[in-house]
Amino acid sequence: MNRAINWISSIDSHNDRELALLESKMATFYRDNPSYYGDVDFATSGWINDPVNQDIVRHALSRSRILEVGCGAARILDHYPELAKRYTGVDFSPAQLAQNRSRHPAATFVQLTEPGHLPLPNSDFDCVFSIFVLEHTVRPRHFLVLRGISWHGLADSGPAMA
Image (cartoon, rainbow, N blue to C red; front, side):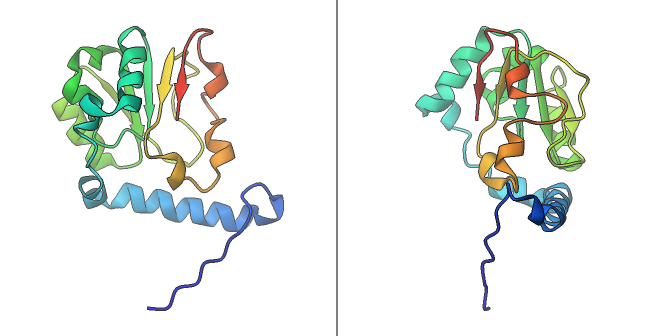
């Protein structure tokens, strides 16, 4: 197989059409490939051992409204089920979200349908985090200021961790 990489700027407006097409293809891949989530589900023990994850946990335990962008299997809830009633996870895969709802019925799970837009009411979350997602975004700059909920739209004392 011969592959070529075509680097383009995600902040140059001349590339918007090509970037939108790539975003659409990636959203379809994440939505329609349930095996992908199992293939990348290697971070389970990280919620106990990893210092970065432990920092997220430390913040989340003291917050009332928690949002995980790109929740995958929502592994934080496996180790900290007491967060479920305060937790909202968003991701593309309806199959993964159905599994999450079955495993964590007290939590809220919402399907992403459009890259860069969170289909949530304009809610205030006081803790927003995302793990292993930024590197999968076509427009990292847009990801950091999502339409619908902005990282800077957090409650005054809320941490945002990506």
